[in-house]
Amino acid sequence: MKKKTRSLCRFSLSMAGDLVGQLDGMMKDKGYANRSQAVADMVRARLVEHHGQMGAHEIAGTVTLVYDHHKRNIQALLTDIQHDHGDLIIAAMHVHLDHHNCMEVLVVRGRADAVKQVADRLIAAKGVKHGKLTVTTTGKEFGR
Image (tube, rainbow, N blue to C red; front, side, top):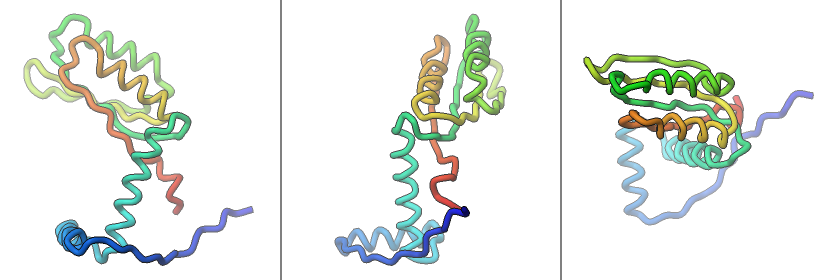
């Protein structure tokens, strides 16, 4: 049986006037057509953040790493970790920032707890200057 999509639901919000003014300013700056679009976008962003903290929830995202490729064994170590987790790392891009520094952006997808564990290993690898896991949604929880 086909899953039924939910209809539009209306509800009212009450908030301080100065907060509404700031919302209206942000809405204009970002090009939202109305407050409903702006609030829905903020709710989705918080839901993505919430789901990213739930261990069994499937997430997608990127792990960005910056490192000095002259640092002994760093490339081999990062490659080994990536090969150990090919089920979670679905794509990779390597960029030469300058003569010494490289950036890798790894696209990840899987259970939040597993993705975070791999990201932590990569970021903590000796020789990584900076690393960051950015979590987003697979899109499934927001329907069509």
